[in-house]
Amino acid sequence: MIPFKDDNPTRTFPFITITIIVLNCLIYLYEIFSPPRKIPFASLFGVIPYSIITFDQIQPIHPVLSIFTSMFLHGGLFHLGGNMLYLWIFGNNIEDAIGHFRFLIFYLFAGIIAAYSQAITNPSSMIPMIGASGAVSGVLGAYLLLYPHARVYTLFIFFFFVQIIRVPAYIVIGFWVIIQIVNGLISTTFAAHGGVAWFAHIGGFVAGLLTIRLWLPKRRYYYW
Image: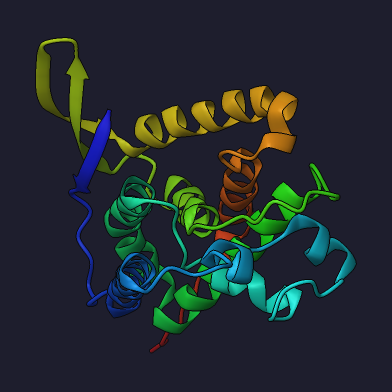
C-alpha cells in the first residue's frame, strides 16, 4: 500500500511542514551536485550512536548538533521521497492541531527521541545515521492518536491489480508500525553492518503517540 493523500481538511496553511520539505529537498540537491568530497556528508553531519551516548566529539560539529543536521540528510532519492511523502500527507494536520511553532519543536523532539532509541540498541556503533524518518515517525504516531479514522487515499498494488482505495488511517499507519517492529527485530542480527535504523522509527513513533496530547494548545472558553 502506498498512501499519497488524506481527506482530513486543515484550517491553517502548513508553512512549517512545507518549509521542512523544501529544506530537505534543497539539501539533498546540494549533496548530489556538490563536488566529490573525501569525507561523505553522512560522516560529517550524520548522528553517530557512540558519539551521542558518550558526547565524545569525533566530528567537526558537536554530537548534539549532529542529531539535528542528520534529520536533513538522506541517502538516496527513494529515502528522501518516502520521508517527504509521509510528512506531506500527515504533517499538515498535526501542524494545524498544535500550531506552527509547537509543530516545529515537536518534530525536532521526535527526531531526538528517535536518534537515541536507535543509539541505545548499539551504543558502541560508529555508523552514522541520517534521514528524517525518526521525526516523521513521530508525526505518524501523533496522527494515529488524533485522527485514527481519517481516510487515506492509498495506491493498492497486488500483482497486476492496481486500485486506489480509501483506507482508515489506523490501518495504513498500523501496517507501517508492524513492518517497523518486525524489521527492527530482524535487524538486531545485522546491526554492525548498517542498514535501516528501524528502532529510530519505532522510538519516534512512540514519542509522538504518547506525547502529542501534551503539545495540544489549551482551549480558551468564554462564559456569559
